[in-house]
Amino acid sequence: MFGTIIYMPLFLQLTQSITASHAGLLLMPMMLGQVVASTMAGRLMNLTGRYKFLPLVGLPLVRRRVRPGWRCSRCPARALRPAWPWR
Image 1 (cartoon, rainbow, N blue to C red):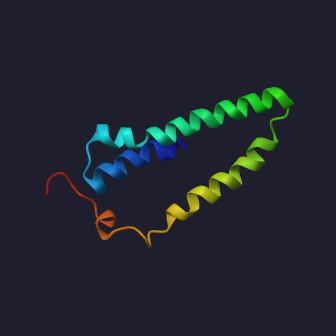
Image 2 (cartoon, rainbow, N blue to C red):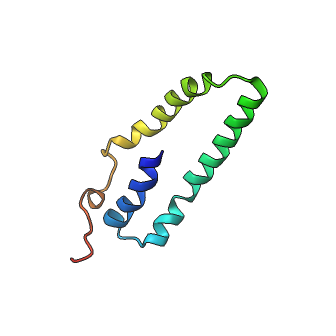
């Protein structure tokens, strides 16, 4: 989670040539999703009194969602080379 928050804006700025503020706006849906998910998890823990099952259920869900992004077979060629600002 924290690695994505740090890495994603830099990736977007260097490969897609967008501004820092635009990269921050592109992260907004992910951040809102994390806020909603953590709120729901906190309420679920409060209702059930159990907390150990949440990482056991959440980790496979996150891994399933993130893993397809590791493959770059559908990435455009432009995304694979950095757009350095001094070009």
